[in-house]
Image 1 (cartoon, rainbow, N blue to C red):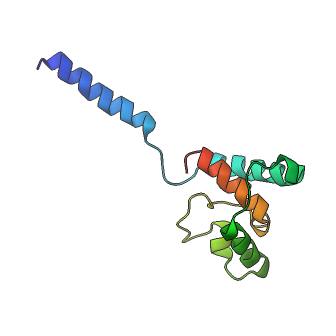
Image 2: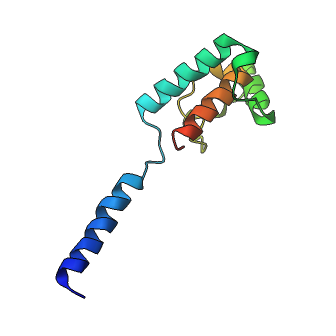
Length: 110
């Protein structure tokens, strides 16, 4: 193979893969955007919600309201689910908020 062809392949791999890679940890702007979207979704009410709370959302919200597991309920330290990371502590008490937040984070690639 020619040097030019090999250089082209290397450039495609290097630069093509670079844009596809994404960090596993949400950035501050991802967190702020998803908290805003979740807040707006819960403010608009049931008719406009695209995300439906699941059993885990209800369970985490109950834990957050009791204060039993604050780090797990609001995406604090030690939480392995990046879709919960940075969730507003008050929003974490509402299963619908959690569902909207998770959906936003999932759309953002987390």
